Image (cartoon, rainbow, N blue to C red):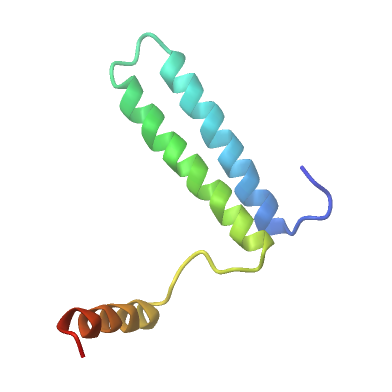
Length: 83
């Protein structure tokens, strides 16, 4: 991994890489019947972890608080009503 990155960024990058490799390994095993579903789930986890590492690197929170979500919903309701 890169030397200058913070610890949480390194963890997310490692998780992303491991999930992607596990997804490919799962898809390539002939004995597993639900290969495509497992592949998709693991690749989505991998991409999400990769985006989280980018957000952490840029010092952006990859999540919102409930209050922020409520305020966002309230703004959408006001716009929908036309006030």
